[in-house]
Amino acid sequence: MPDAIDDTVHTTIHDFNQQIIDEFRANRGRLTGMFENARLLLLTTTGARSGRPHTTPVGYLPDGGERVLVIASAGGSPRHPAWYHNLLAHPEVTVETGAFTYQAQAVPLTGEERDEAFARAVESDPGWAEYQAKTTRTIPVVALYESGDGGPGTINAGSLSEAIKVVHDAFRQELVLLRAEMSGAGSALGAQLRVNCLTFCHGLHNHHTGEDTALFPFLADRHPESAPPVFARLREEHERIAALVAELRRTVDGTATDPAAARAEVERLTVELEAHLAYEEEQLIPLLA
Image (tube, rainbow, N blue to C red; front, side):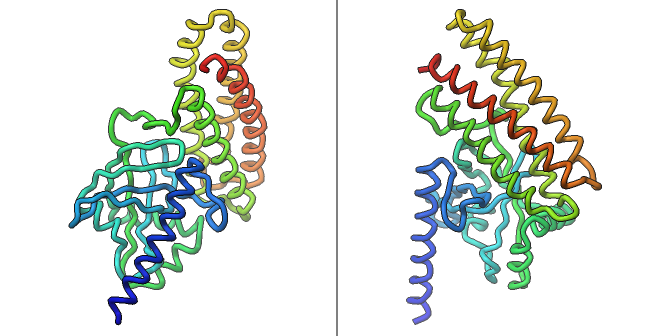
């Protein structure tokens, strides 16, 4: 009888996860229901015994420009989740963020580094502490380092014009999450929320640098009639946004951050960035069609 119960539970979890995976891929990372504002990614590992790929939706923590963190909580189960055993045997994994898919190297954190990361997770969501309280095992925290040349990975789009919209929508969604997290901040801005802001700033800086150095020259060469007015304005907007990003960095990069000041900077950046993204799509997508 216990085996039958275990099989039923396993099937239920598999079906539930598959629904999330299907929705995640269909909507490039956007989910509805209980996970609408959750930070989730799809992690594909290689089975430790079977050697077959296994995809699991997992919560993650932004952690700068070089890595993200995932937590092997298994809801406070006494056993580590299967995906954790898989990556111990095969550290090469595939990560899907919705906008991007990339290969990564999984590295479990240890000692103080693990404890500090888990403390940040608990600070941002007390549910992690509840999971740890349910079990005697130390819940692992794993860093996923992007493999390859350090680029953003493969954009989940079928064309360059579609890629612009996909990447822009990813920034829009991140702003939605940041603003929701900011609104829930109390009298002090938590360490993980500061990391979230700084990670967003890093990603936006890299995106605009790539546009300035590669995309804009490419399009200006193909469409010289659009070069003077359009690309001059876009570069000016990049400079204004860079100044707002720098101010947000200064506001949140410290232990005595004023949440009200941080929220104000995020709102200023949101207004400017949303207008910029809309103008850029209006001007560039037709050039790439």
